[in-house]
Length: 158
Figure 1 (spheres, rainbow, N blue to C red):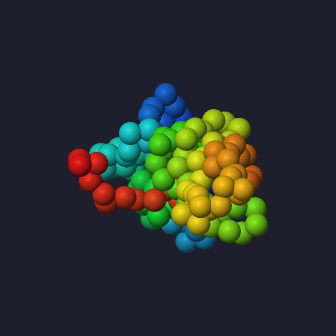
Figure 2: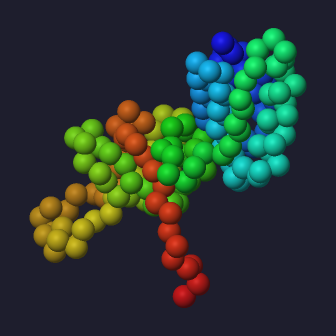
């Protein structure tokens, strides 16, 4: 079976000092290698093709056959790495909190230790001034689960 750690090592070496970064590598029992990349400014398809060629140059099909797929993370893929959060500062997100509730918020800031969000305040809570909870919160990455960017199709031109 293809060694995931070996693939990870030469992928990370190839991406060193790049605006692209490795999010995940999966290697199935049938030697299907799936590599998921992200980038500070997105991931061009040419970068996926170049990475695929690089991986193929490091492995020998005569020794062990494999299937290879290199792609960018999908729009519905949860954010998992601090660098992904930094890239998405200013965007709307939905996350699951420690109590299991889905929360809509705007990602205000991100660092290696956590994020700052501004929760969406419902109209009901705006009317009840005694429940004036600060919508801005600092959270650690352990405080949020399944964080996804909300894709908006609204035009910014008004």
